[in-house]
Structures are given as C-alpha cells and as structure tokens.
Image (cartoon, rainbow, N blue to C red; front, side, top):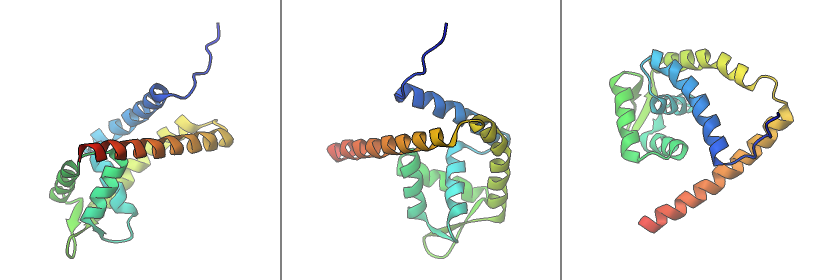
Length: 151
C-alpha cells in the first residue's frame, strides 16, 4: 500500500517546522541558549554593526510574532550573559562571545540541515520557497488585520 503525498496545509507546515526546530533546540540546549535568544543573536550577527534596540525587537517580533516586552527581556538576558552589549544611544551590538556562540551553534546545526535537505531537487525547493513565502505574507496580513481589531 502506498501513501499519497499530502497536500501542503497548516498541519504539514507545522510538522515540518517543529521537527526542524526540535533539531535546532537540541543543539541550542547544549549551549544554554533558547530559540528566541538564537533568533535575536542571528539578527545582531547579520546587522552591519550596532543595531537600534527597537529595530532588533521589531525583527524578532516580525519573525516569531512574540510580544515586544518578551523580546526586550530576551535582549536583557543576552546583555546579562555578555552576548550582546549596549552601544551608543539606544543601540546594542553583538559581542565576540555572542558572535562565537552563534557561529558554533550554526556550525553544529549545519550538518543536520544538510542531511534534512539532501536530495531534494532544487526546483522543488524553489516551489516550496515561493509557496511558503506567499503563505507567510498572507498570514502576516491576516495577523495585522486581527491586531487592528483589538486596538
């Protein structure tokens, strides 16, 4: 008996997301880092120098749909752990320790990602990327509409 390939739907997306996230969180846990902290560090790493704290908060909120106050707390945790540091004005910067930790966890995660995506044809990845980007765009628009109703 063969199983039909499922159509993409919220459940299929969630299962893929949480399976991949579980792999990442396993690596992060070995370094005492949470998923939110990792996302925040990544945004600080890819920034070209110090980043406005508000911009960092907005980036994490945009990616994870967290409450801004929760993200502020994550930034404070990273500053306390000396992975981020205050910079001039309302800016923060990644520290050498933060950059090293991010590089280490990304490096440890890379082989898992490579095995997960291995053998998937590039054209399939391109289609999946387009579809998931469109779903994200539409879901963000729906969320903005819901937020407008509560304001």
